[in-house]
Image (tube, rainbow, N blue to C red; front, side, top):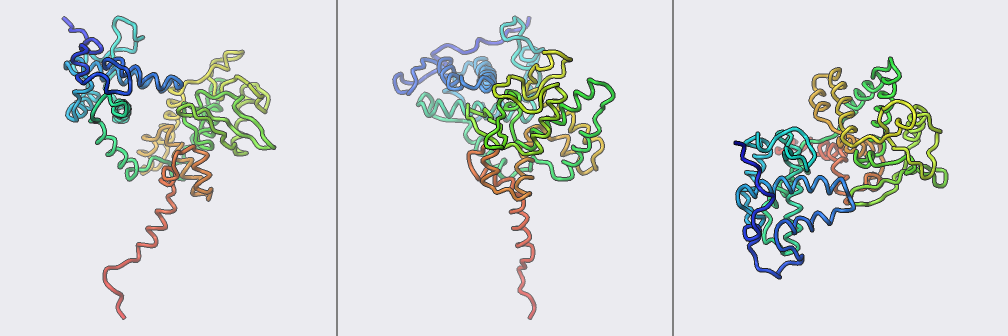
Length: 373
């Protein structure tokens, strides 16, 4: 007989072994503590849904071991990472996607990719950091992992497309099938989406949530008011070429060239036929899949040394590519940082490859032996 998954949390005695009254939150057990942390993200539904999924998986895993958050050690973090990459026994943890309330719901659709494992660890690290700040817990076993990941992001492989890769992508977009009206709809939307990602540096979730009415004109210049991470709103300048791409896409949708104030049409729409249905919004997952499909097509015709890069590329690589190419084109570092809404100039500086090239050029002539007189 299949053994069911454990209850979400063990008993309160197991879940929390600490003196009452010392914390800055009024949680009596782990379930309440996690609920309070999730409530901090109520203004960002996508983030809330993601965080809830990751914490529920972890709490289920802990509950099966009779453990609460206060008992988590670094060994458990490493064991959980291995479990995410291969959730066993699979028949208990893995199954088809179903609503959470379904009797046969499973926490996983399959093993997680390395990137998804890193995302889960990052989310859980943020949970533990919050509960430490609230004095609910007295340690963060995810902290070492977080520091190591930060170092990898600073010094690891670059996640952007060089000029040759980008040209291959442009050639691929121009060659998309366009024999039928539906194929032309798909091709025009893909061109618009890549122009939008590349010229704005926006995140795919920001694009999925955007409306045409978020674009506005001020003193003869067009801007896009982006509603970003954590509810932060910023006005991003619209390049002339990006506005031209918008007018072309709007023409394909049968809309007037210029967006109207308060216009509720999604910035990127599904291809669903004619009539009002053609204005259905495109999800961020669909945006991801469209971009990956174009990258896969580009890899088929790319030089051998570029194929691996194109196959690995994702929507977020276009954000990095936007920063890199803008800096290479001479756009000041501060302006690029503001356009991409980075919290720190150091984040933007990572894409300033010309600085690295200059340092290398200045250093390559050094010699440990003095020149002969």
